[in-house]
Length: 265
Ligand SMILES: Nc1ncnc2c1ncn2[C@@H]1O[C@H](COP(=O)(O)OP(=O)(O)OP(=O)(O)O)[C@@H](O)[C@H]1O
Image: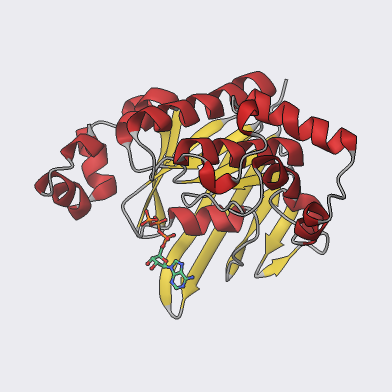
């Protein structure tokens, strides 16, 4: 059986005001894979994730989603909304609408501002509300459904973001440092939830992370960027000290000097 490719990035380059953020990046993520994206601060992880759903446009290169061109040479696919509906995004800052309830945030989804208006006007169908509640149950916070988003802890808010991806019907989840603002216990729960969705529902998951111990614990494969270039793409078991020093360079020493050496073990 040949595995489908969920995301293909081909020879992608991007500069911001003349400063290179991505340089000739190519990588392939198979359908159903769970991949960590690592690298020092400023290495290009967020930029790459944002190209994978067309939030950023490359200067050169192509990004495919399930074999369809999502963007090429700086142009988005004409039906980008349809392609994007397959891709759920989770960010470090929870990106919820604080004044809305948890269930409304799930119903609003990642994409349409229009839906906020629908939500305010309570225009959701019973079926949609049922789906949202089922998603909240799946991520373990059903009892929070009618609280305001602002009343939830960081870990719970990240679960709402994941529930939103589920309701959206995402086949791919792109998570940009989803655990960076969480305490270790909440971080562990969010990572375990992502693993569960990957294993049980076959959702393709790409997560940018700084915590190497988390990468080793939850991922078989990692892609590492350094100064916008792919420095490593392989099994996480191969990420030994030498490789990590190559990937993080001076940043590795800096982390140790600042007393955050645990991030690299
Ligand atoms: N919108 C933007 N405008 C200008 N420069 C940008 C923009 N987005 C990213 N960059 C630059 O592109 C480079 C890569 O940034 P990016 O945020 O992708 O790195 P990162 O690996 O995600 O970093 P971090 O781990 O700190 O989030 C950096 O030099 C950054 O300053």
